[in-house]
Length: 361
View 1 (spheres, rainbow, N blue to C red):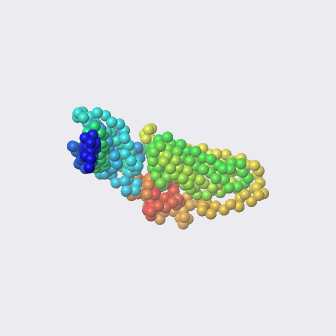
View 2 (view 1 turned 60 degrees about the vertical axis):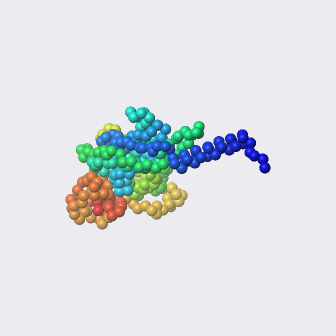
View 3 (view 1 turned 90 degrees about the horizontal axis):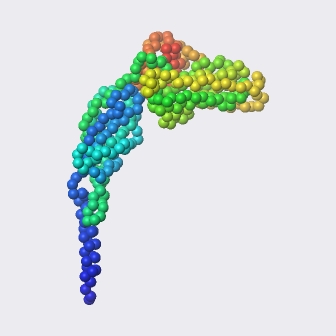
């Protein structure tokens, strides 16, 4: 039997050595452990309810170390409705050299909006994976390991919205770049035709689920049905309302508005969509059956001040901005105040009154 050549034996030795190095590296990881330390704070340091902010992390790691699958703990409870809204994930902001040689500071942010005022100490717990790249035996390897670290605590401050200048119709919309529009379709009609009014609110901010447009100045020549929210997406809400012009005198739709708090201007504002004009093809109802559509899911709006029972409140009622006991108070209604019920949610009723609109149990 022939002996292996010297060259073949040398090649086999090199391959075995490489496999041994790879085995050792993969099984025992890098020669030294990777430590993650850092701090957390809020930017800006103080905000009002609903104002956009971010919890900023500054994590220090060794040069060449990456962070993956980050999750944060120790934050105010996002599961409690009406408390806080967080972004879907942590955003990478920037890297910079650390004062500590051979280390890098990674800045990351979790965007948030706090929906209730609070002052509390927060100690963020960060856990995830560290990816470490090493060179060994002329080859480059990457290993991963989990980590968990508790950052230095900071004080979270969320101030309530100012009470001065707050309109009675304010329902909790906070942000900037609010814009309200309305469109009538069709806008060339006969008396008795069905007209769909579409109200669109665009914004950069937060609007609660109970937000509703204020509809004012609609002529009594219209038969009006309750408006409906038909779509909601980040930065955009759409409502529709069915209107029936009963005579050719119903030429203008209502003025539609939303009360909001503008975080840039630092004040309450009324965002309006001006009335739109109908053009009547004839003073007579159309001869075709174009009015035979039945609005099955809608009901006519009650006259202003009319309550479901036809009476006013039986006792004092406290109306709040949102359906929550900790939500700011809009007004307190004395007994006998005429009210109209506009909606229900989890045992709460949304009432409209001459003193304002709000939620009560």
